[in-house]
Amino acid sequence: MGCGMERADFAGLRIMLLAGKSHGAMTLRSVLTIAGVIKLVLVDQSRRAIELLTMEHFDAVFAEECCDPVDAMTFPLAVRHKHGICNPMIPIFVFQERARRSNVEQARDTGATDFLTCPVSPKTVMAKLEATLVAPRPFIKAPEFFGPDRRAKARPIWYGSDRRVRAPKKVQVLKGGLPPDSFLI
Image (cartoon, rainbow, N blue to C red; front, side, top):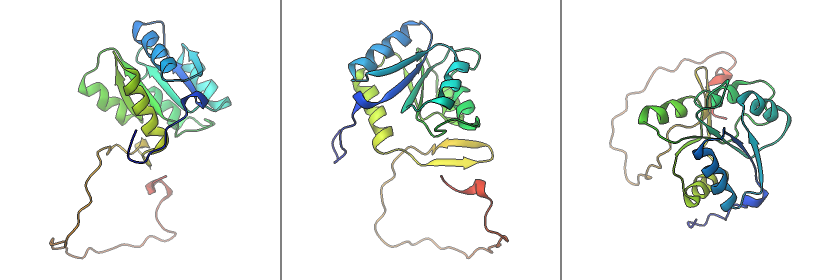
């Protein structure tokens, strides 16, 4: 994809597709196959998907919006907080046939890695999957959130003098250090 990033090997990936029999799910299945994914595990119930994630290793999950009993909007939350998941920091892509900004924000706030809307192209899926595998975002663990850093925009590095005036703040030192939930993972 340029910029010195090495090409991800999609043939070696093990991907879970949590979806029903909708048109969007079949399209995404075809797109993943075109992208070169050979090991694609299809699951139609979120309960079964969570069970498989506790027993087996997957490289990524694509979750459709209409999966029962846990829908795709709360599925990342369930995976991130479920005890016994092999990789709680697994990339989770939520996809919907139609989405509003509020849907994207809700998925992001529950710990989804990225959001896709149908129709999707193989190029888009490959770019998002490769970006997640080659340069994953850091994970944040806080009392109310566990998931990839929501600040996805790359900010330019500032070169020059810092002309802001900073007043020293009083620092309180906690015995035993900071609480463990305040660290980046």
